[in-house]
Length: 201
View: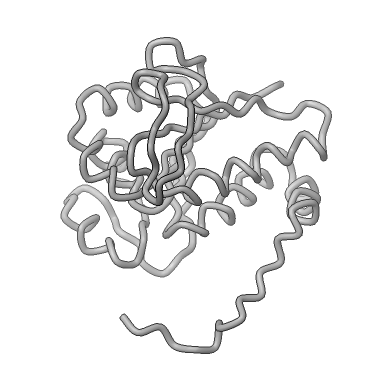
């Protein structure tokens, strides 16, 4: 079965939140024959300007978006606006009906929470936004894991965690062997140069 993977875009989305999972899922074409179709979608199908200034032309609008088996919703400052955008929330609910898995990275979890998709579920977000996610009373907030798998919904913590989540999903939806091959093809073996230096919060 060839899966469709929809990456939802909006102004002020955090670039690595969606570019990381995009790289992981599109790398599957170098590993398996039946690779998924990965595409972007924005509300009107036009370009979006991301948090750091990257401009991206979406493949589809909400109106002509194909059915998606996996949905990726990035975070970024734009989520503060989009979580109150009724058109966005209705679209996410529409995708949710047919999707195998709906995911978020970073504060993309605010959009899922506002759409009601996190009610009664565990979820995570960027460490600096944990307190804001806790304001959604029906969400069981997890602040120690890189990603949280609740079956139909998977949430990842901040920015680079979306890469880990996407690799995990490849292992879950295809196979761990496939995920390892993708990881090798990406040369994703993180060795941060300053990992032993404590972060000043």
